[in-house]
Length: 281
View 1: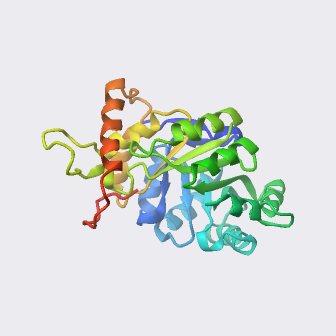
View 2: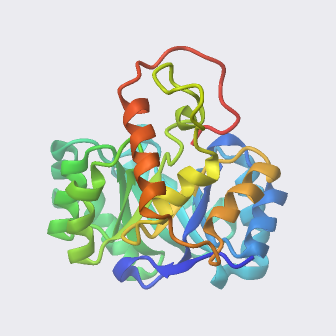
């Protein structure tokens, strides 16, 4: 297997086009195995013990070969919280730097506050200049805000929701990130597992997508540099990595149309309480 590689926009970071997010408890062993197969992008937060274990091991032996994106918790999106996040990342993981420091932003007002003199982004830029951070990023559900951040160049990368049910970024965000050279990471390629469930409106004789189909939909868009997987087990992760194998052909126009059609049905289906799907990202 050879995992697709690219450069994360103007950051210069060489990244695998599939990355791991540790929110669903992926183990340290599974994280290390994925690296051995070619995955090198890891979205990390301190509470994720399994991924923490894997990264501590990889930092000791392969630090130049891995890309660590340290995420700031929503409750910590202020100067003190960002400072603590970076301090914790360096100490817990045993590294001298993180590749990306990523803060969640939801509104233009939050961005304005972050940009104030002496504020969060000024400090983050200082850390980038000192080498403690290589690139600055944000995660957001707000497509207009993502586009604005790309157009103004206030950050180096942005993480946005993108899947075959939520395709607005294709027209509202990606043209701006492409023009500005901003790195793009996609989250929720499975729409929290709902793309793996059959909506009532979807005919019983028509198949529903597999997880690999959903990942391939996102990976098919070359303006997206990385798509995250939130696998729970090594078996799920190994299967998902097949979608990022560089021998995979692009989706055909018919396959893209079918996934878009299914995504449209899922998008307009009311969300109801139901058992948690095997994969949720």
